Structures are given as C-alpha cells and as structure tokens.
Image 1: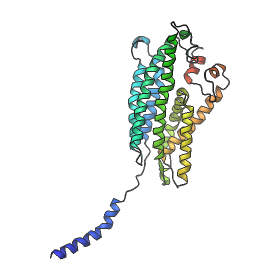
Image 2: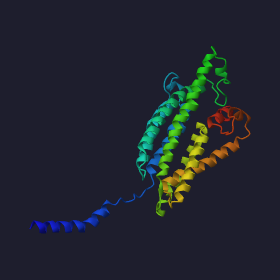
Image 3: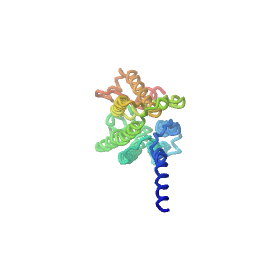
Length: 301
C-alpha cells in the first residue's frame, strides 16, 4: 500500500513539475512611465532650487533678518531632504537590480555637498543684499576689496570656494552618477515600452529648462557633457544587443539632449560680452544666469 502511495505521489510530482517551473520562471517586469516621480522632481527643482534666490529677493528683508536663516535657506533645507528621497524612489523602480553601495555613497555625498552649498550660498546672498556683484570676482567687488585686515579677503575667497567649487562638485557629481546608474537600467526589447507618453512630452520642456539652469548656474558644463556622452555610448552599446531605452530612459535622454541645445544657445547669445568673458576665462565659456542678471538686468532698474 505504501509503495502504491509513493508511486502516486511521484506521478503527481512529475505532472505538476512543468506547472511549477512555469511559475518560477522570472517574468520580465513591464516598465511604466514614472510620471509621479518625474513630476515631483521637476516641480521641486523649480520651486526649491530655481525659486530659492527669487523668494529671497521678493520677500521683505524685515521678515528674515540678516543674522537668521532666510526663506531661501529653508527652501534649500527642504531640497536637501526631498531630492535624495525622490532619487532613491527612482532607483527603487529600476527594472534591474543596481548597486546599492554605489547609490548609498552617492546619496551621502550629495547631501553633504548640498549642505556645504547651503551655508556658502546663504552668506553669498546676504552679501548681494549689501552690494556684492556676482559678475565680478571676490577681490574685485567694491564691498570686499577694501576690507581691513586684508586677510579677511582670503576668508571670503575660501567661502566662495566652498560655495561655488567644492559644494557644487560634491552636490552635482553624485547627482549625475545616480541619474546615469538609473539610465543604465532603462533598456528594453519591447517596442511598446520605447515610447514617451503625452505626460512625458509635457514635462520634457520644464525638465530640460531646469537642467539648463543647473548646468549654467552650477558651472558644471564638463560634468554634464561627460554624462550625456556616457548616455549616448550606453545607447549605442545596448543597441548592438537589440535593446533600446524605455519611456523613462527616453525622457531622461531627450531632456539632456534639449539641455545641450539650450546651453549652446545661451553661450552663443553671450559670446561677445566683454565683462562676462573676463569673469569666465578658459576653454569652456558658460556664464551664470545670475551674473547676467546683476550685470544687465539689475543695473537697468
């Protein structure tokens, strides 16, 4: 009797094995367009990053004394928390497993760099309210060049270094590394997934325009171009394997492509400006929008 039961159990196991194996076969996850995350990233970038210096100019100075954090500082604090959170959520939705160690290191460095920039930028905007001119170097500024003792000027140059160089590098390098890591997982063989939906096309303009501001104001043209070239190389490499960017990958790729065009237009427009040429010497000439503002717009009002 036991022998019969064993045989029946074995037969049932053999019959059910094909069904079990089908269930255990990993199915390729169909990737949908992350409209919610792209929308949140775009809106918060415009409000908390681009809008930060504007709200400091618009709101009355009496509301935020110079020895206290300004409204822009609170915007920056919110940006330093919300942006890494949204980028982690973006990585979580990647259709392929990405290196958690690399992502975590990038997020930690991003927060540290953005926090360094928060302090330097906060003091920098208070200097603007006191007459500091962004289109001039630190030593050439009227409110700085006559400081006594002269060693104070070195301190302001150190502040400028933390704000415009070290802070930006520690902020933007991990930012673009995370976007590129995410982009490497956005490839598919399904033709239906290789289309940007209408919602993506509507977000493309605001997204690319923000990246234009990020590249020009952050003075990270080389880093941005390197990231874009790496994305192009990844597209070519995956194409040889019969894969193409899905809707999220195309949205990111098109956003960067439009940004390259906008930066080129900006440089062409200010190509012959002698004052900005003097402040931004070197092989790659990309003036900052706020330097243009203090030089050409603020003076005319």
